[in-house]
Length: 189
Image (spheres, rainbow, N blue to C red):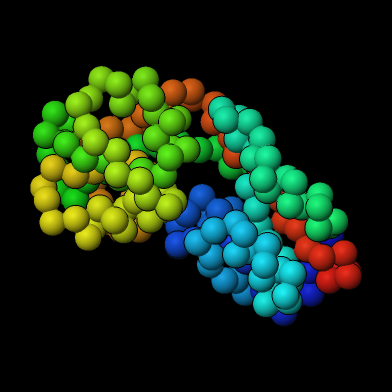
């Protein structure tokens, strides 16, 4: 990997324990970072110098390319410093153990929801949209009902102290997301 200066700040999608954050913790733990809620905010921060690099998802093995991110990287002539891949396993989590049949509402990012359709079609539930998989868990924690759940990954479920009631609910066992670490051409060494 082309090394960033150690004082570089990396922008990534948050909140803590999002899949972006898991990649950051695994591969880029020595750098400072800032969380953003949307990709366009990360790209803007990179453009205006608030961050020196950005960790951006560009492809998912189930959904294909994330065209808006790829187009923005190309349009802004950003330099790719490295590529990372993360295996994505999705689970159904609740605040207190209940049976799956008791679940009436599920918080989920739209992509996670789509990646679990075979499983979800067996349930009679409402989808409540969350901005990320880890945000779905935060939304669940704010929910005052006992019959809500959220779709997310292991690390986030463990971090928030929630209970898994169903594991590996994604449609395909092989579910990989590809991330790029990008920077402005003049910011890298």
